[in-house]
Structure formats: structure tokens, C-alpha cells
Amino acid sequence: MNIAFLYNVRRHYPDPKDSRSQLEADFDDPKTIKVMISHFKSIASNVYPIEADEKAYLKLYRLKNKIDLVFNYAEGIFGKDREAQIPAMLEMLKIPYTGSSPLTCAIVLNKVRTKEVLKNYHVPVLDQCVFENTDLSNFNLKFPVIVKPVSEGSSAGITKKSVINNIADLKKQVNYLIKSFNEPAMAEPFLTGREFSIAMIGNPPVILPIIEPNHKLLPKNYLPFDSLEVKWYFEEEGHADYLVCPADISNQFKRKIEKICLASWKALNIFDYCRVDIKCDDKNNPYVLEVNSPPGMIPPEASMASYFPLAARTAGIDYKNLLKEIIETALKRYKK
Image 1 (cartoon, rainbow, N blue to C red):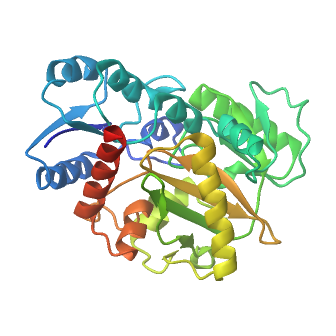
Image 2 (cartoon, rainbow, N blue to C red):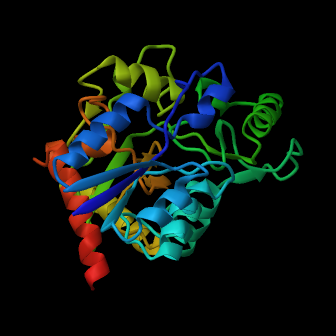
């Protein structure tokens, strides 16, 4: 089998104090890409690594008759629908690929649109306010709230300064996000309940063991949520007990979360694999925060804290076989 591997390279490590460094937070560092390529070479006859930049289309066009499948791990570059770029190219070139369609990829990158779709399908999501500028006249939520950029991933723009308790700070943070990321900002209620990440694979999907961050282990100067500081510094320092997998939850609550995740998959028309992030309120009511398609897939040689591979390892699936399962899942979809 001949596989093309599409990816984006990160050249700046995300810094909570420097918004410019966060613009590549969704990308992967050279070491991660190198290790992933080595895994692909162990399961495919030929591997064609292609960086998902402006030259990607030409490379795909030249190789299209040699490629059996593209493993699409690309986030895209430029624009707020950037995750749809590579899938759209592949659709045009009639090259099979892993993961969701251009439409789905565009929607899930946009947290506001994702929640609108999910709400229409009766999936529990939080109320939200969207700000195109610093006019806050539409703000109707109770404090505290958390403020995020609308179309960023990997906790970019989400730091301990994102939790807001008054109008003055809200206006300041909204202005900062709009200027830093050149996109709207959104606010939603800040929940302090339990948090879960749920990896899903297959068509129809199988739910892998659920992950729960143990916020009680965070230092006192960290707030209990998956901020940039937590994701990129605390987790990567190797706190082995922080990510609990499988989560310690009752079977009844597990079924409730799984039902929400399956409904999200169906509503958004996900293909092959994804990860759903859920947060609970103080009454343990779960809400979908976002859906990641494609999700992060950092191999254990580069990080032990990457959620999807962690869930797979807990299920007894090593990284090589995880890649194989995603590839086989996509190929079966194209054969139908």
C-alpha cells in the first residue's frame, strides 16, 4: 500500500505570554512528524510525506496515481476554514483519505458553528455569546465566563486570563483575542465540574476508554480546566497521575457520556475517528465543549500525554496498530 501523509510543522512552541507563538499550536513539531513517518513506513510499502502548505496541491496532483490513501493529519494554513483545505483538494483529485469531509472539518474548527449544529440535534451544549468587536451589548451570561477564540485548537488563546468575572476584564480579553488571532471571540459559562475527553474510532464508531484530567493535582496557580498552561507545560512535564484513563465513573454516567458522543458524531457526520471534549457543571450535567476531527495523534516517543493514543493504549492498541486501524477504517468506507 502507498500512503501519503499530510501534516503541518510547528516551528514555535506555544507560549501563554506570546499570542504569535500560539498561531501554530495545532501543528506538530519536527520530532513528532519524523516519528510518525517512521511508523507509517513500518505499515506501508511506500510513504510520501507532504507538508500541507501552498505547494501541497501540486505534490498531490503529481502523485495521485501512486497514492492508495492519504492519512490526513493536516490542520491547513490561513483562513478560518483551513482544516477543510486538504480534504477539499483530495475530493477534487479523487484521492481517498482518512477523516471527515471538508464541510465537517470546517464546522468543527468553528466552536460556535459546532455548538449550533449540536444544539439543533438536541446534544447538550452551553449558551454562548459571540463578539466580532468590543461591543458587548449582546452579552447576557452570568459571570464567571471563559473567553476563547472561535476557530483555534490545542488551547490556543485559552489561558488562566481567559476566565472572566466582570465586564471590564471581558472587554479587555475580547479585544486581545480579536487582535491576536484576527477572528471573533466567544464567551460561555465557566464550569468547574469534571472534564472528559472521549476518543472514537470506526464507522460506526467504537468509544475508547474515557480520559479524565485530575484537576486536583494542578498547582494552586492553575485553574481547573484544559488551559494552554496545563496542556503545553503541566501535562508535558510528565505528571503520570494527572490523566486518568479509564475515568473513574459509574456505568450509568459512562453510558450517558457515550450517548452524547455518539449523537455528536452523527450530527456532525464524522468519519473514521475523532475526539469529543466534555465538561460538567457542579450538578454533574455534561456539556460538549468541542469536537476534534482530526484529533491530536502524537506518538508516545514524542509525548505520553496525547489523549487519543493514550485512550488507545488503555484499550490495548499500540500506536502502530492505531494507525493501521484508522487506515483500514477509511479504506472500508471507500469500498462501500
